Structure formats: structure tokens, C-alpha cells
Amino acid sequence: MPGFTSKSRPLIACGWALPTVKQAIKAKIAIKAWCTVSTLRQKVLESITRAGWEMTAPPVLWSPRMTRCAGLFVLEKDNRGYWHPEIRLSIPLIRRLDRPWPLEVCGCFCRDPDAVLSRILEHELVHYKLWKDGDSDWGHTQRFRQIAWEVFGHQGIHHGIGTEDSGNSM
Ligand SMILES: [Zn+2]
Image (cartoon, rainbow, N blue to C red; front, side, top):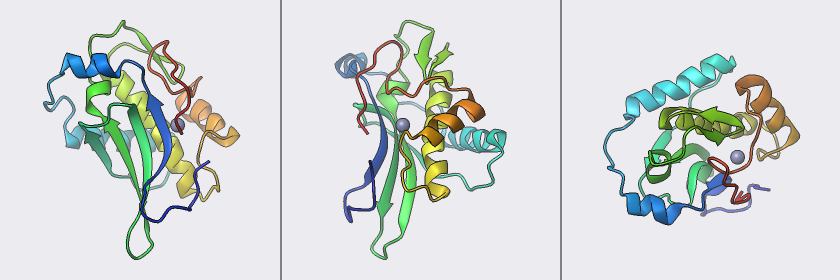
């Protein structure tokens, strides 16, 4: 489980590993503004509001280079020792359209990339919530499962999109 042990390397509490990376790269999905930064931030804020959580939204970034995980919750420590949370999303994996829809993500059926994005964001936000609450473990704990189910209706937490479950890469 992640802990405050590393000073330079970011801590990654969650990874969505997908076995179809090569296909995703081959697909070369255009890195255009499929979901702009402002709408992405809006999505995060909406999810937090819907959850009834009184907390600030963490920065959320699109990464064109993330090809192993669709979503990550990352903590980085600065020179002064402050931790900075961040959610990173994979452009090539989340924007893939050539999938057999609907897809199962977090135990929910998703009918388009936008729904996949929402479920992954919600999942990463639960990690963020545990961290903000000061839980010593913000991984897939019992409390994580409880929040994911009660707040977002997630029935699963396995790290895969669709029926592929490539295991836990936390
Ligand atoms: Zn996770």
C-alpha cells in the first residue's frame, strides 16, 4: 500500500492497467480536444458536488503518454515537503472508440467514452477523498469500496475497462 516513503518519486495509489495498449497506440486516436480542460474540471466539480463532499477539486490532467493506466491518483512532494495530489487520465486509452460497447468500468456499464471518463474520474476521486480525510491507506480499502458503492454506485473496483482485468497495478 502506498505511504509517505518516497521523497522524489510520485506515489501512485491507483492504476488502471489495460492489456490492449498496443492496439490503442496503433489506433492513433487524434489528440484533439475531445474533452476540454474546462469541461473536465466541470466534471470533477460536478462529481464532488453530487457526492456532497465539501472539498476542493484536485488538478486533473490529460496525459498523452500514459499507455498502461487509464487513470491514476498521484501524490507528489515538493521541495518544502508539501504533498500535491493530482489525477491523471490517459488520452490514448480513455478516448478509444473502437471498443465493444457497452463497456464495464467500475462495475457500471458505459455506453461511450464520456461515461468511461466519468466512472474513472469518480474512482480516482474516491482515492483523493480518502487521502483528504487523512486515512492512512487510500488504496482499495473497505472504506473505499463502501464510498464507491454508496456515493457513485460502483459495483466493482477492478482495474480494467470492459471484461479485461489485467490485475491490480497499485
Ligand atoms: Zn483505484
